Amino acid sequence: MKFIEIDMKQWVRKEHYEHYINNVRCSYSLTIDIDVSDLLTRLKARELKSYPAQIYMLSTVANQFSEFRMTINEQNHLGYWDIVNPMYTVLNTKTETFSAVWTQYNKSFHKFYEACLDDMAQYTTGVLFPQKNIPPAVFNISSVPWLDFTAFNLNVFSGEAYLLPIFTIGRYRNEHGKTLMPLAIQCHHAVCDGFHVGKFVEALRYMAANSEEWL
Image (tube, rainbow, N blue to C red; front, side, top):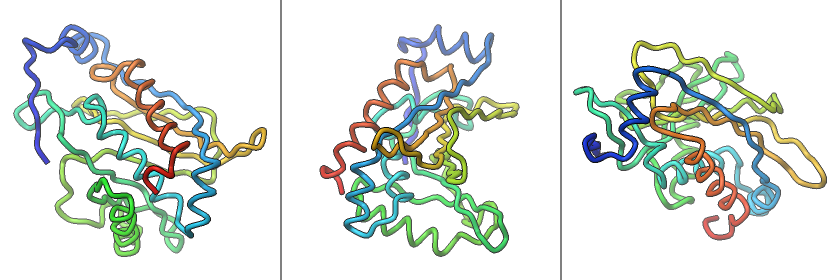
């Protein structure tokens, strides 16, 4: 994982970044539906679990756009990771508490899928952070399959700006013969505008509709 520093003097979004990091400090969230009908059919035919596939899709698309890999390093310099890895919640049904587990991203779905299952099996202890040496280049995914929400908002209180995205997956619902997955996307306005979220959603919907290309 490599941190790529942004040259602020040359960056086209310098004015926008400084406004939303200094004057109007804000993140924003929106909720969209992803049609996963064909994806679930293919996963079921191959006897594959859907959660690792969801994590893989979000990771793959996040790694396509630098706006979803932005952070401020320890030297207080703005930049982005060349690769980000997913950290995702998994519920321990005995303790009814969740663990935040991370898996190294791999472009190969099948390699990532197996690694994800191994990490879930090993680290779903109910302890919040069961793994040691968590890398800094991780973004967060939560799953709340008990709720089919139409809106979701997170309030992140921190002395420092958290620039990486946060994704929340809800329970599927069926409408007009389609299976829809609600997805809440939380971004910091300093590094990510609605235009960038639009490109992200378009790419994610393409992956869901064309899973034969990567499954």
